[in-house]
Image (cartoon, rainbow over all chains, first blue to last red):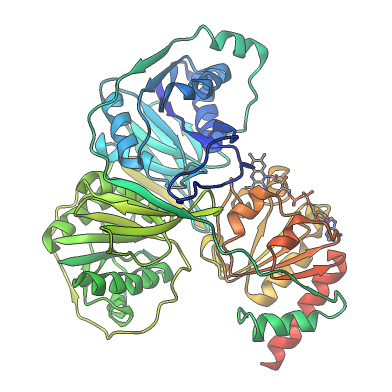
Length: 246
Length: 320
Ligand SMILES: Cc1cc2nc3c(=O)[nH]c(=O)nc-3n(C[C@H](O)[C@H](O)[C@H](O)COP(=O)(O)OP(=O)(O)OC[C@H]3O[C@@H](n4cnc5c(N)ncnc54)[C@H](O)[C@@H]3O)c2cc1C
């Protein structure tokens, strides 16, 4: 099986989110970046498990500048066979998806895996876009994936439950919690990752349809009102009369 | 010109998220000087009520094959309706279904997309619209440069109001492609509102000490008609199911009321819940960071406070 796992770089979860004075740029100084958790913990690990069980190859792909190589090497250290970096800034979901689709269509993958969303822009869009661009079925929010000889059985997380379906042929999926268990790279993996191939390819010409024009911070809370733990009637009264939520 | 709203259904009924989208779609349509058209795929009943919430027209393609969801098939059909109605803006719910369609439609229509918008667009400097980013830690304004655009509307951002009247349901001829996805079964927990759609949420964390103690959380949730949630470690150690895990790497929610008991309020937890309208924190540690993000705080032992709160809610409901 030929598996492609698309990985993204995101700020670390405790990163301070701050913007330039004119509020048009996210300040990256001092921010540590990581592989997007959904890509690493679930999509990549499940792909590695499938390879271990059925043979095949796992390629990790990232759209980004050379400073992303450190994250790509982590994917190789975890067990991917080789890597591809499309050498351009991921300007928007559409722009990024078009780059991935352009590369993937030349290479005929059986499954293309994504995390369900990135923890920075939370778009949940790239996987679906790639599926449409390649005219493939898309299984989103997959928390379970089993392969039979000719079919994939996927469980998709839907509101309040799961939907189980069968897919024949190549497809695209987005990974949710439950699909696999996070792995930690070992020393051998890290050593080997340095010798694995990382191919850098030039970007395709794609017009970017969307851009960010500004940022703001959400309205903070005005301050907490502390209540007497013996008097929960008062809390209920406030929730009803003051906050008007019950 | 038209604003096309994909009105999601479940079990033959229009979903609440569909009413929110139609209500929002009408606002967008008014701003764009366009008609608001609601589109229903599959055999749901009672879809003329979408008119009440702002749809000028309702189109239903009631082919039963559309009752099963395949993003590829649904995208093809919605794309045909976009062409037939000359829709410029397409609006979907920010749900598992809507999000699966958003990217596909963007690619199909070569339209810019924004997922999880929280406000009506502005037209001052082209088409711009806001969404929450960094898992709720910030808000970004996106500009869409294409003529067509596709948006998903973040749930609970607008409260749908009855602003229109019932309209006759129209049919439209479309070509429905064959699907390579076969849905075998759909398992849903009946009787509770799913977490992403819940207006009231009661959540608990490691302060609960063990899964056997969750009864008090469930009782409070039952009394309020709320949905239960939990912090990540609690789901990871198997005290609670994964789908209850809220936060930066779990479900992001924005209910009207979020009650957190025995949760410290780590930054990754807050990221997924800090857009809740009102937050109540119950914790025995006055230094718990969650108090800084709360509207109401109770400093005390949750094993005493939660049952008291449940009693107080009972009394309140009885007095209504
Ligand atoms: C990459 C990454 C992603 C993460 N994503 C998430 C996420 O999505 N969601 C998430 O929740 N976490 C996430 N975390 C974990 C997060 O950092 C915290 O560890 C976690 O939220 C803590 O859970 P908790 O509040 O239940 O437990 P604790 O931090 O152990 O807090 C327990 C709290 O209960 C209180 N308590 C104990 N006993 C009582 C009592 N009897 N009465 C009242 N209060 C009591 C304590 O004072 C304490 O404040 C993530 C971490 C990382 C590194």
